[in-house]
Length: 294
Image 1 (cartoon, rainbow, N blue to C red):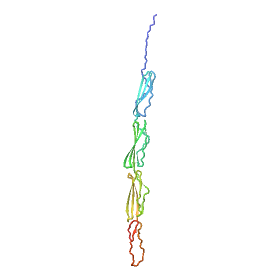
Image 2 (image 1 turned 180 degrees about the horizontal axis):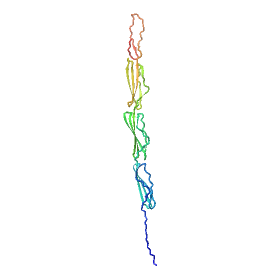
Image 3 (image 1 turned 30 degrees about the vertical axis):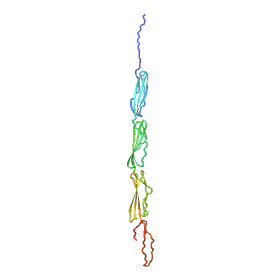
Image 4 (image 1 turned 60 degrees about the vertical axis):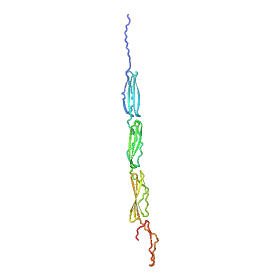
């Protein structure tokens, strides 16, 4: 019996994993967004042709020229059990182009009297991405008198990236109010010629300035030197030319008869050759000499 003859064939199968895993979800794309609209990072998963795959995530921030201008680079790496990897990178450009907003109701343009100019409001502002500072400036432009002028008030809200919101208020200031006399004003009177009062010391106030007072007196003659009329006028004027008048009329009369100075001669009975000489008699008057017919 002959020995057993054999033929052997050997097959070697080399198994390898060279296929990278694949992400399951739609991948996030590059984008540019406002600083208050940065999306949350996605959670990505991956599958592999031969087994499981793990996904790691890393985010890198690169600052820009202000706190709310920057770049985010997000990297997802899917790795299978044999070290094959698939990488997805998303670049998010973050910017702040939105100006801040004032919080309070804003003061409007107005026209006011010079004693009713409001205080400047304190305004604050908010920003979509951070804080905002409010600066204030007031400019005065003079008019044609000290109490006529214009105020331009400017509030500027600025965020950390230099975006600004400006509010301007124009206040037109004017003085249209007349001064007012103070105290008791002199009234019209009728007096004897020796009782003419001295001009009163009249004072006045004004809502916005110290008024000046001018005094005028006019004499209107009557039928004799001691019968006449005095018209007295006080004019109070403020620094913007608003004024008020007060008029007093003094009617002056001489109703008092003169009086003799010397003792007057009494009635006498004398002989025809003893008639006395006519004495010199003088008289005085309360207001001066007045014509008389004796």
